Structure formats: structure tokens, C-alpha cells
Length: 245
Image (cartoon, rainbow, N blue to C red; front, side, top):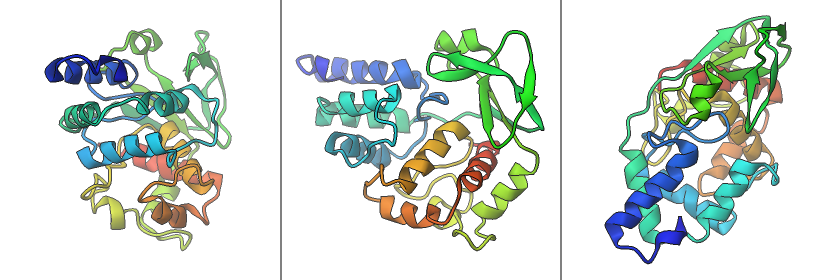
């Protein structure tokens, strides 16, 4: 994004949106490999880019391409480019694109670039303690179609267990609503956590647990996830993904 700093402001703003849009899509919908930016608070987007620049937001998997790119690309960004990108994406309307299905089995998958995709044979396998999130139409998603949809398969009972944890009823954590709003769709500078990729959300909670995210609000999140195991995290993100954004 920093490559356009010599151009006039309106062009630079457009280039920022296009550059971000290559991975996050022009409508900000993203995918399991990265964040859904549409409708995030402007101040939150600005803070996350600042955290990437400073090193406060890292990753437990430093070789993984999406966070590695974000860390690298954030450093040369100008204040104007960050402002333009945050203004653009925060003004977009989030859309529902993920269906969560409880099942004993899930499609057998293979690696397709930066995400998992169902094998063409239609084979299924036991789901176990996993979330299997796959595009409903891989070619459409790979063609950068922002209308692409996903199905996330989770083990039976995940949504009920996740709801209990989100509501703070387990004794292992506190209500998500305290910081993210009664409808979990954001409060002030804090983001909405509904209708987002469960794969992405799981990685973020895991990063908070393992001190890879150390930004302004991270100390609070560390307390929230401190007593949760990986199965707890899976059920939480399954429930949140099932809600409308």
C-alpha cells in the first residue's frame, strides 16, 4: 500500500482500498484465511494497523502467509493511507455468508491455497474435535467473488455449549456482551464478533491466549480466554459464527 505515496490523495485512497481488497475483497468480506473488515469500527481498524506496524499484533504462526503479509504491508503505510482504508471498510455493510451445521461428519478436505476445500469426490469423514469450514463454491471464491458463501461443520452440541460460554454461564469466563455489546455486534471501538469466520476467530483467540496479540485491549481478552481450553474456543466461535453479522 505504501507504493502509491507519490500520487494525489484521491488516487492513493483508491489504491489503498484496492490493495486491501485483493485479500479482504473490495466489499470487505474476507475469508477463513483473513479478517472480515466490513463494518468494523474505523478506530479499531486504525489501531490494528498500528499494532501490526509496532509489533504489538503478531501471530503464533509467524510463517503463515496472511499475518506475515499484514505485518510486512503495514509498515510502509502512511497515515493517510491507513485513514483512507479504515474509512472505506468501516462504512461497508457486513453480510451473512457463513452457515454453521452441526454434524457427526464433515466433508473430507484438501488444501486449496490458504484454506481447506471439500474434495471433489464428495467423501465425508468423522468430524471429531474440529471445525471444518469450506467454501460452497471454491472456484467462485478463488475468483474473488465477494458473494461467496461458506459452510462450517461443527460437532453436535457445539452451538449450545458455545452459547453457554459466550453468556458467561460456565464459570470459566465472562459474558462477551460486557465488551462487545448486548447483541455482540460491537460497542464503541470494539468490533462485532457475530457472523465471522470461525476459523479466523479461533486463531485470534488462540493468539490472545499465547501472547501473540498485545495491543491496547489485549490484556482484557487474555483474562477472558485464560481458563478456556481449545474445545471451549471451538464451541465459542461456532456459536458466534452462527449469528447474523
